[in-house]
Image (cartoon, rainbow, N blue to C red; front, side, top):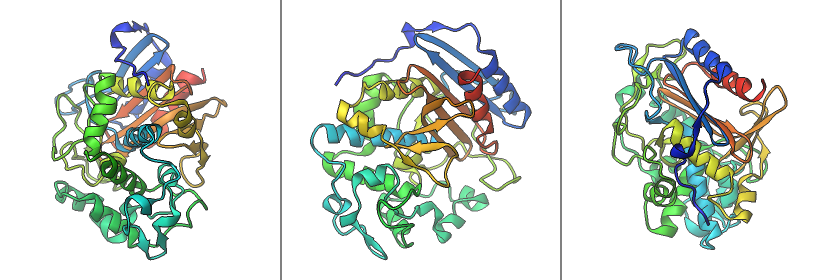
Length: 363
């Protein structure tokens, strides 16, 4: 397969995208600490921002800033899985039991009936460990802040998910679950003998020149320049905390990665453009299922999703939310026209991103 190198030097700067800039300004006026966006259309590039990376000092947002990308991490994990499928080392129809024998059994679960494909498109029915009542108590509010440096193993979090009954039988619905991606990543590590972080680095980040993209191991501090990650700890109207520093083992393969607007551009453009996967796996990547009860007007593929905008245009990509950071990276199905956005606060919801997408793709 052919990898795409970082295209920053090959781009021509767009002079302005006033609709997107207005959407950024409005997001800050509505209460977001800061918002950044990068637009690429063919070989043209534009970066804009509003608000601050640090509201105390007034430091402005910068294009090279790194931030936590939440569930956009799933696209990285799914890409590694699909590359292994393309290499003949794994099949999407393989069962979880084949690779992780005995792990997904009991309490209504049978790993013999759950496939790798169902993990990646969230049709496995496996309960999301983050919604476990006891774990959830430690995952929001001051409890999370007090425990933000706690270390969790993948096996521990999978077992927390499995102590709850399944949402539905495999293949009988859609249930967004981080547990799915923990299991997929554990399979990657079983097959390769290397950590998922290492596989992302050697298969994606290094070939594409993504100098700001990585999956933290024991690091609790974001490497390099980054905005303050302001968080209400998912308590509506709650006190705002600096959630920049935290152990990311609670999110790992499902939501623990760090990246930049530029790196996300390069990655998703390469992925959607068919430069990271063979043709058969590319088709699987973009084969979607219904997402009842999730983000409106979306369909989920394997680590990526499509969203139909109110104007009728359908965009593709990924997004994520974590403590102090919301990310949306969406564009044309071929990746040529793409927008990456990030808010360094976690209380604005999807409205700022909807406004940016409408400004760029519906004007």
